[in-house]
Amino acid sequence: MNEQFVKEVLEKLKIGELSEFYVKKEDFMEFRQVLVKRDDFKHFRGIGQRGGDVLYQYLEEPRS
Image (tube, rainbow, N blue to C red):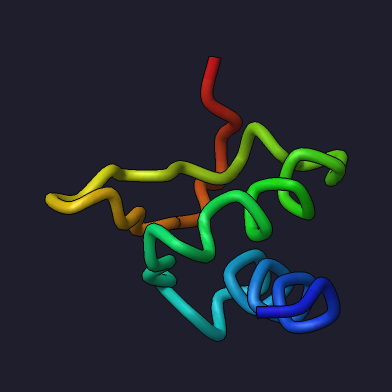
């Protein structure tokens, strides 16, 4: 998983092309490094899954 791919996925989540995106445990840190640099970081919700994977969704309202 490279930075450009992560940026494309995050943009697709934002515009609604994807409703959610599943990130494997081994890709989490690379994915998160790109995510936290975004201005709309608080609009993304990560839901931890069994085994360390994370399911990301985009929220219209930023989380607190």
